[in-house]
Image (tube, rainbow, N blue to C red; front, side):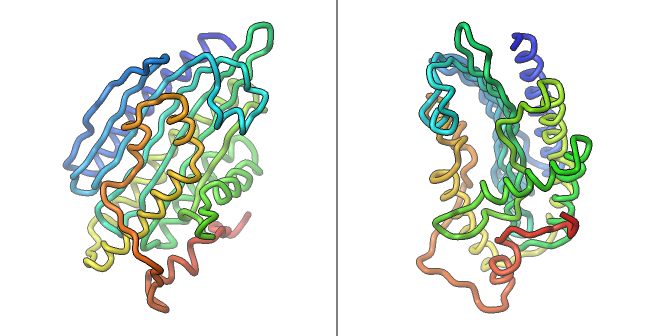
Length: 305
């Protein structure tokens, strides 16, 4: 793997971070991102950008990182044992947006590139990423829009790509201890190299570029919807599920912490406020109950998988 290939990916990721921040600032209309550049003692660093207390966005982060080291962490070698004894380079953009209004879903996206090298052997490399949506008071038109954009981003790369990566997303963002999906899914892919470098890189770019197209129209539709204190409480309760997933199941969080990444940047995905309630059960036939019965389970949202 040539150094030029890594530099090309890093340049794209930095540009993506800029474009997403600009798009989200425009959608919010009030707050702006603050930038915090950081260095990693073991090698590499990143640029964390955080937005908070906006007209639309309560808190969110768009993080670029590039880290490298002499050995892969345990979380990576457990997933890919052949990486043991190899040095690595990892770069990516990861974002999470937590809106004020419970009618606007939380959103997450990530695109990343890994290279693992060992003298005398071919490098092992892959791309990964995706995006997923976590609504509290979901609207079917929003969910279908999200998945339509996801499907359109995949279509140039084969008809089976969207169904495969949609299913992977449903399975990955699943809280086993709650027996429910984190939200309504989207796309998730990892270990992607079968297309060759250039085509795999093109696919990662297609997914990264699709995020604003998928999310901003939902924000625009829902940002002026009135909400009650009870709906806000339910949003904070459901945010607790988001915290549970990130701390218990998310491989990216574990990778970042085990590689000595910057904790503040790794945990920027956490909501500013969340709550837990013992043995909560929504009122029958309520909008809150509808979330559980109709949305927190894998579904064919587009009706043609």
